[in-house]
Length: 160
Image 1: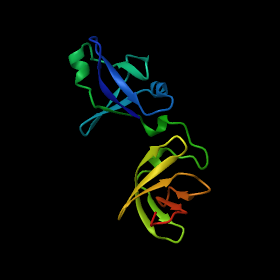
Image 2: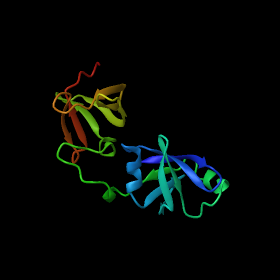
Image 3: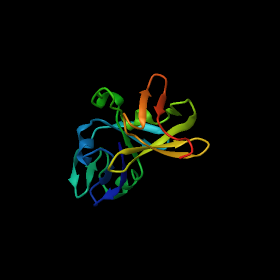
């Protein structure tokens, strides 16, 4: 959902980069899950607000700049149950990462590694024998997404 970029000021606040749109939507989700290394911890925010193009947050037991600096690079997550339900043919990016991508005639392109937001449409970055950038345009390029089968069927030339 985002990450902590570093300390803000001297009173224990941290700068947060949000991956939500708009960025302040991240503040609606409470509690946050913070990951440092391989360990996740559940944290309730003390204070939070929009600041410029990003967010600033004060975490519990974070009273000064040194304490805030220890959170630099920390990933921010939430529990899946905190997200609103999707409508039919809507997907969270996280649902698509790791799915196999195959063409209409059954040729496997690879696995969705991540997605890129281009403004016009999202793009699947598919890693296999080579990398494919597949526009996520339902009804044109994307023929079907089957979460149960963990597969996306695409109308795409494997040589492209």
